[in-house]
Image 1 (cartoon, each protein chain N blue to C red):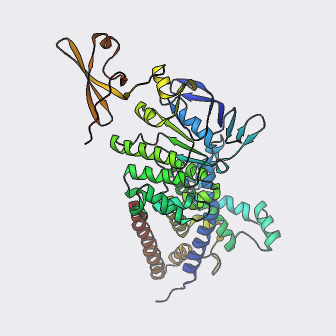
Image 2 (image 1 turned 180 degrees about the horizontal axis):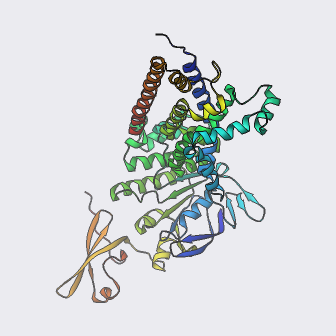
Length: 222
Length: 289
């Protein structure tokens, strides 16, 4: 029994891209939050944590409004990139980035907080700039947080369903990721194909998580 | 000369108080900041290192102005050549001992790392990670790392307070050795009188943010100049009466000594007091072991 590998490939591409973008956004954001003592910080943290508690359909609904041709973001996007944001792969990536943001930022922020301030201060007094200190002293001391953030963001994107369905629909080869494919197959009563996709996702997710815990254990020991 | 004057509002455990200090001392001297915890010693050190900003003040080290609130000068920590040693060592856990020292260098000079590792007796541990070293060894690395940049001023923030007495004595010797060998100007934060007597040229006593006394340890702690032939600082551990005299057991470092006290001494001394045991008229007998 053959299945179409395209949805699996799309899922991996979406999760991979989302994770890379989230590292780029999450690292500076988490660092700023860990340093900041400003009064607005609880507000920022609350906004950031919203995707954790909101039903994906609520987020997806607002994304859809913003990403559509009439929405402010969708209109601007279409002017610049000449294609619609909603129901496109780009839209999925953007939605996933926002949806998975807390899964990246929280572990990183905890990681930054856990590195003793003394280490940074020792580095500054040895003449090293803030950036050099972060790259050479702070980040190497929080490897397990870096790993956890990346894996959680990746795994969460793989497991996404509600948001993707709302803003991506189920366009073959463009927005039909594995979780959507399973839903479609079940709806058309093709349980066998659904089983194959589901089993692959299941095994894949389990393997990733197991690897993370094994690696984290080793990182902790040293 | 080193000139340090600074004011800053601090919140202590007994309510807010103002740190207000004006201190100057010659180069190549070892100055101790002595005082209770929460009196502002560490803050003063951090102000000197540029890690904290005073509300007003003036800092000049070897003719260079590091901070001047009226002229709006405030060099960042990176531009102040300080060697900073923390109580908890603050070694970089992901780097080996050699890498910790190498990180501190502006340009790679492996020869210098080797010399310092030899001097501190850490040569065999060079490829080990800090977590596998004892507290004393870690503090040696921290000391070597602070010195390798040839700092204009060495700042030691209670560097030995987490170590046992034996290790402490050895590291005190090591600090003195480095201080003299490299002609360093050193500021030590300590609340251990023995350490103050052993190491410092002058001591400044800080009490709730103000310097209450500044001078040699003898001047400061005894309020007079003495020319003792023999003296050491110790703590009274117990006092007991034997016939018509009193015998006090005193601890000095690892050693325990017994000293005869008169009745008049007993009136002012009690168990737990820190005292200077000195002999002026008689020389102690010294026998080579």
